[in-house]
Amino acid sequence: MLAVSTKFVSSVCLRSQQCAVYRLQLLYQQLRWSNSKSSLTKPSLIHTTAAPHLYNNTHQTSPNRLFDGNSDLHRFLIEVGTDPKEARYWLKNFMSSAESSEVFMVVSLNNDVMESHAQLETFASTISFLYRNGISPLIVCGSRADQPFKVTKDSCVWSAVKLSDLIEQHGMYTRVLYPGCGVVYGNDCDPTDISGLTVTTDLITRSLVTKHLPILLSFGETPRGQIFPVNPWDLTVQVSRIFQPKKVMLVNSVGGLTDEHGRVVANINLPFDLANLNQRSWCSPAIIETMAKINKLLIDLPFESSVVISSADTMLRELFSHRGSGTFFRATEAIHKYSSLKGIDLDRLRVLLNRSFMVEIQDTYFDDISDQIHAIYLSETYSGVAIVLRCEEQGVPYLCKFAVTNKAQGQGTGDLLWDTLTHSERSLFWRSRTINPINTWYFKKCEGSWNNEVWTVFWYGIEDPHLSSGLIEDAIGRKDSFKPRGVIGNIMSDDEEERIGG
Image (cartoon, rainbow, N blue to C red; front, side, top):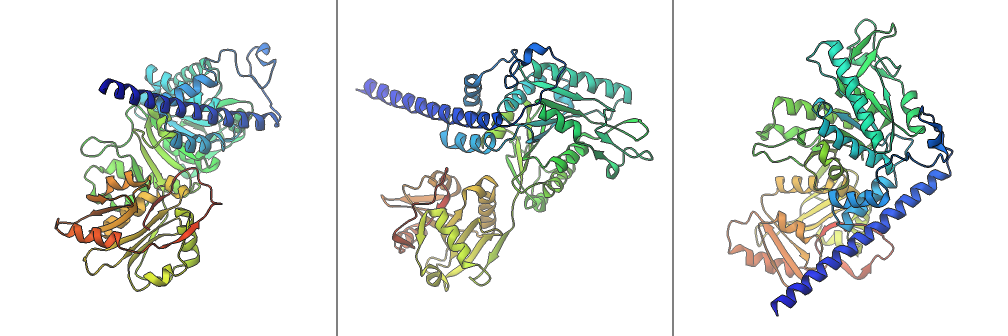
């Protein structure tokens, strides 16, 4: 009997995985078809020194191309995973919005990667995959400052040529922008003065329009033609400010920042985390300086832009999932704390709650809680909120509502809101419907829980174990704050919102 049950479970799991792969195949092909359809309506201009017979069809890539769509999908599933929800979100976010003629991401390549053939091969394969699927990168190749200028320049040029060859072996065309080609300029008096560094975009844009991946070397020239080295980060910042990419990636051979235990620091919210660096023992002066520079860059980029420090072999996972091994930097909006409803736009707050829960809140909800408010933590753009009520009988505040819009989750507002909440509140308890899919997240955040068929009650910071029974009775005894038949059917969401309460 046991063997039959095990076989049945294995069969179900296999079938579930096959269905997930099939759904992703359909989505992937739909997005590729959509992108190719839109690209066919735009004129293409190809300019290259390659043999003319390669361009009998201007919409066809090189015959040396090693991968097709199915191979790309297979690689995507292996490196990123088969979670349909996560893959759907990232594929739509990246593939649908990427324009091949625009710089979608700026990639700064570390010297360690440039000087390692294995790392460079891995990077070339990944960057070709991205470019082939509509994500246009601009690559900045660094130069060493600890070597004579001629040695540094020659080494950087040869590494860039090697990278170009490797990328073209994967069927993508490249254009190396060599020192002195008229892209990066500095002052005659002091070429190394960052304030005088300028970048002309004509050659970069022309490269992308003609389907050539631009590789920019970190050298500049003065108006008199003198060549000088440029700090790779300074050049990355300069081109990022001009092209306003969605991603800036700093690619090295080791991956993201690590804490005192050697574990990767996955997410850093700026400027919030920058103000609390003194509390973290792993933050060296060099790391603090790096974070300050990244924060300064993010201020000049669109709010949805982010910076990632990643190794060459985990780039795809960093871009398309939440499970990478790098460090993800993002700008997060301010979280404001209120002790009452005064100063809060209740109409906007109601919209946030209705949209997050996809159920209409009771018309009298704000009147009902107005004299019970312990604290309200609200993001500046009304994309996330935590409503905490007093519970004098139990002596522990009750988290009545925690809601974050789906878009804000991707921008880190949910994590920031929770961190702010738990930093200010030493103890809390709350309830969530047992069928709520976000409960797995709450189990990771809580220190204790209890559930029945309807509710799951969570808590943290409770030192007295006898107190939990009172918290449970209080939570499940509270009246529902949503309309009985208030389901909002016209709100479509690709992913579940973070939400608790009832």
